[in-house]
Amino acid sequence: MAIATNLKNINETIPEGVTLVAVSKTKPTESILEAYEFGQRIFGENKVQEMTIKWEVLPKDIEWHMIGHVQRNKVKYMAEYVSLIHGVDSLKLLKEIDKQAKKNNRVISCLLQIHIANEESKFGFDEKELLHLLESEEFKSLENIKIVGLMGMATFTKDINQIRKEFKNLKVLFETTLSMLADVKVLSMGMSGDYQIAIEEGSTMVRIGSSIFGARNYS
Ligand SMILES: *Cc1c(COP(=O)(O)O)cnc(C)c1O
Image (tube, rainbow, N blue to C red):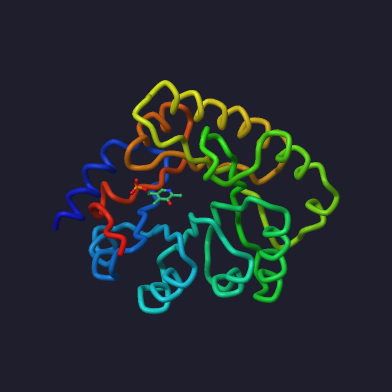
């Protein structure tokens, strides 16, 4: 009941053209089903193992997005079914995704994660690394991955101007990427606390967890 109400309220604040990823990490399958019954079909998880268990038991028309940091040795467990990997932060990881996608006769859609926050702990490419990657022959030779856009996480702060500035920077890089690659259309930015700013700054995909499912308990 609460989940459906939350979803309804959030959907009302999200304009057409912006996709909602319901971030269900740590939440039980019952909660996901509640959102599913309300019509939500895209769910985001940050651990491959947890996502795979949920994929196995839940309806097959759910699109699973991997939004967390991905270890290369885990790619094989999701290669069969994952619909979008948000946090691609190295050529090495991209090559492993390409390899596992090939084994599964698939082309896996990926977002390149960009480091926009002024925090050490957040993963991702900076501008120079991004351009270097996009121009490299090795990158261009990968056939079983498709880069459909960029993803970023703003600094965890109450300073709205700081958050806005970081989203603006990401949008600039998104425009650059758009001009270099054919399939780019997704700009994944914005979470429960900052998605409205992200949308104002050009987000096309928001990843919202706690505002839908409630606060997470990490044990
Ligand atoms: C957990 C997580 C989210 C959702 O965070 P909320 O604040 O609960 O909305 C979004 N993006 C990433 C990468 C996450 O790990």
